[in-house]
Image 1: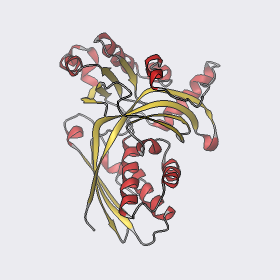
Image 2 (image 1 turned 180 degrees about the vertical axis):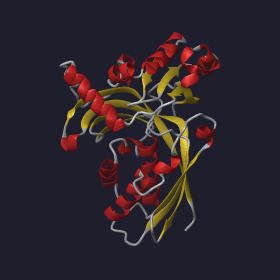
Image 3 (image 1 turned 135 degrees about the vertical axis):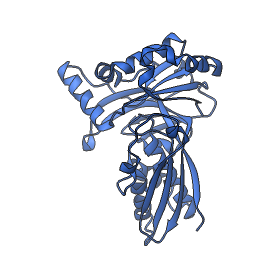
Image 4 (image 1 turned 180 degrees about the horizontal axis):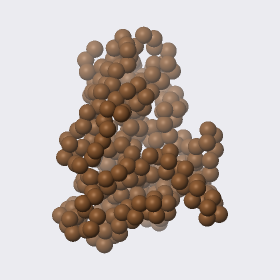
Length: 302
């Protein structure tokens, strides 16, 4: 069988609220997620087994100062291999495997959903290759089993995601304004599991409650009144002051919004024009934190 190639986009969170824990000790969330123009390139072929994966640095990573241990994710615990195994099990297809090569441009532990996006793309392409053996409901069930962000990456470009990642309201293309996005990744990553543990400790210490998650009936007009907020910022800005400095730098240059993406460590600024975004990038070295920037990237919402 010929090689199958696809491009998996990164995401950012225009808001992220964290609710109480539920099943399997996972938190409910509520978030507006948008895909952006940074992609991992995945090339794979279907084999008769076993499962193989190799991850290499893409051009974005190569041009950065990210000290990524790529080899650490080149193993069968990779979420992409979990997706492949899950697909063949759920579709009752025996004696098959995949040989995967990932050209990594989306940093990991960055809050950009790279692994989830890679896994969702593989699920979609495998299903196509086998004649769409799994319907949409089964695909979404499988995606949720693989990871809470994976179902979002099976949807359209923008969506409001609630609950455990299982309640998704897709937003039609053109409804939300297009932004030019500048990503700033400092010289460290943040593990998602550890971020949630830190948030739990923060609420307990300060005798605070989790956000009351509601299932939104999102309308296009709601975007104008949205509060751009990320609950992780209250914890991560205290733990890593550079993140707050980066956010403030975006605001000082007129960004429409600036937030920590996911649990971090990426902070993004959303600008109305490419010129205003470019001006920020051109002046990045004027900020004291610039020597600790591992990656700066200009893209756009898709």
